[in-house]
Length: 201
Image (tube, rainbow, N blue to C red; front, side, top):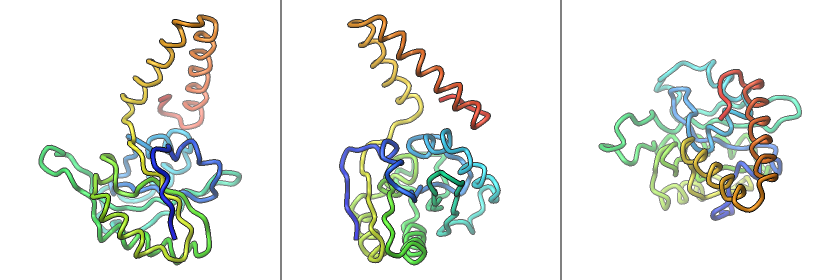
């Protein structure tokens, strides 16, 4: 059983779930979109991801459970090999791998409520066909309550631009609130860097 939430960013809802699925590649990179937010703010996920072999095709169709006490559990689903030439290959999702991953999740988390983005549907995790993905979800997840957040994920650059535009609009109407917003953003970035050890944004 699954339900689709249109236009809502899953990252804003993470606290409502104990388990979140993350579609990703076999190259241990989580550099854009929802994956990047997870990698930056829940560093134990990328630490576990880095224990796997880079570029190993045997990872396709497998999952990796990443957990830490008092934090949500993230389940990495290896569903693509990465795409170095998006101009030549627009759809690089392995539908077979996605099906295998969701089948495993359905067995391991029977009866649980789980959240994910549209797995393999963004330009960062496969750029797959939405209808095919939904058909696979419907086929493979009858025993879990899956909440699918279907929205346009942003790159790091796009996220930063969105934040900056918001801050500049605030600056036009309330200079004091603008300075507070910038201060808060920078403090959060420093705390993020302190936790993950490699990036602020």
